[in-house]
Length: 365
Image (cartoon, rainbow, N blue to C red; front, side):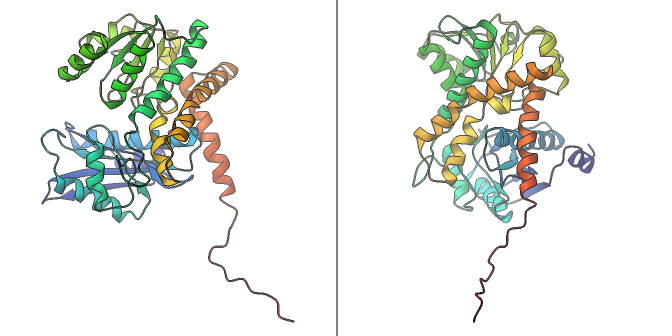
């Protein structure tokens, strides 16, 4: 991998490697674009097979956060951090605090939060070393667990897609295959089951599947069989890249709409979905509820307001579908256009010079 070529190709601003021998921390922080504001994005901890895989994941996720925040109407840029390690075995107070210190060295250019492998209690430990963190589970101004807000936005996006494909947004009787039963996946399954949908679930951790099967009466399938499950909606809620050359032709659904980031291995797979007649809800549009929720902490948190804003995911999915049909392009390209237009317009007004800390001099007569 030629790092600077990759940074230049997609306009990344900064890539930071963090290493601490005492705690065992090995982390990567990627900042994509800060035109609209400081880069915000969660920290993911995962046992990557290689350092290059970790870097690629951080870069892809950071770029996705730029587009997500822009399309959601937030005054934030895109960033992401990944910690190399198994969160079940390698996570420690020292490691998390060391990560927090590295975040603090960036002076607010990057604001971190929870993601896969990092929970609310971990964010509290990171907060011991830096104020540039959101998603705190408790305390003054804390937004708590963002997963239910993310899930609510995904559900609203699914409803918009159902209306487009079937002419009816009701979840009752619809079949949904949920891949990944983490915090967001669990909340989505809970909502779907409550609304009377037929739900299939899969996860690499069998105990998660067993728990939701017992609680909600959903149907389990293996992690590999989930792609071949006949359903109305395939809902990816695990890691990225699950829509790829090996899986796209196996899908037996009419809609792909889920909470996972970077669901497409590359943009050609968005076109492949279009060719197969499958409506794709671009991930950074439909899963924006999480960043909307944590961004609320920056202005004085209000849960009701966060949920209301997450509900606007329905309108943005509708807008993306409208743009795609009007311009004859795939939804993932329409979503990019929506985000890039806002970045371009706001970036344009930032060229206007505004004097800061100027001394006002009055004329003396």
